[in-house]
Each structure stands twice: as structure tokens, then as C-alpha cells.
Length: 146
Image (cartoon, rainbow, N blue to C red; front, side):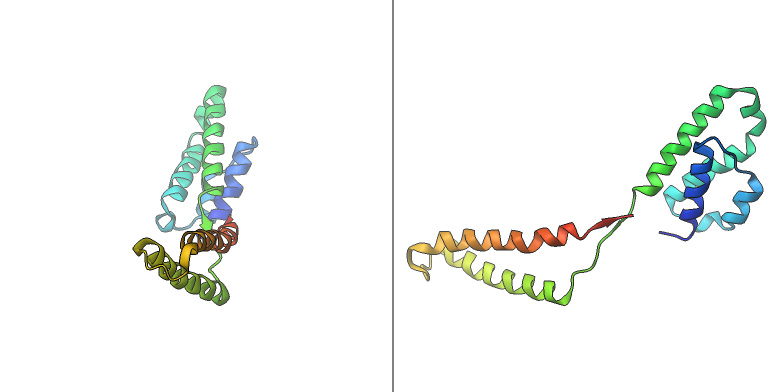
């Protein structure tokens, strides 16, 4: 997420809520639009068009309403695009690595029919599969959306 995104979001919110943005404000808030990512550039272009189309909006209220809807669309896009995972801790990495080593060994035992655990090979394999899910599910819950 670039540092320009909060400025873009604030300006998009202002326009979507019935306010206005001038070209001068946009230039001050975003001095280098070429540094923006693809979605931010699209939002910046829409704001730039908004600032340039004041005369059209004054004559056509439907056009202004239509453009405000576009601002809302860009606003939701900028708010919802990034996933920021928390990297796994060393403890989580060790648990996952140990589980993987044991799971692969037990899986090979079951699938190749070695019979190391007598008649319980399949049950141990399935139990390890559920333990793996138990390890992975908290990691999936640590993903945060900004």
C-alpha cells in the first residue's frame, strides 16, 4: 500500500458524500501519480476528471450522480484490495515442519503398505491429517485485510 492511498481514499469519500475536490488539491496530495499502482492510478484519474469536469456537472445533475457512483466504486476497490498476512512465527514454522515430516513418513507407510503400525496405519494417517488442519486453520485466521 503506497502512502498516497489514504489521501486518495479521503478525497474519494469526500466526493462520494457530496463534496468536491479541486485539481490543485489533487496535485498537492498526489504529486507523482506515476508512482501509484494500477488501482490507485484509476482512482486518481477519476478524481482528476472530476476536478476538470466542474462545468459539465453544473449543467447535468445526472452526470454528477453517475460520477459519484464511480467514486464509490473506486473507494471500495481501494479499501478492499490488499491482504496483509502476518508471517508465521518460528514456533509455527517448526510445528508445520515437524508435522510435514511425520505426515509424509506415515503417508508413505500407509500408501506403500509397510504396516509399521499394524492394522492402525489408516487411522493414524487420518488423525495426522486432522492435526495438520488444526495447525493450518489458525494461520489462515491471521490474515488481515486492510
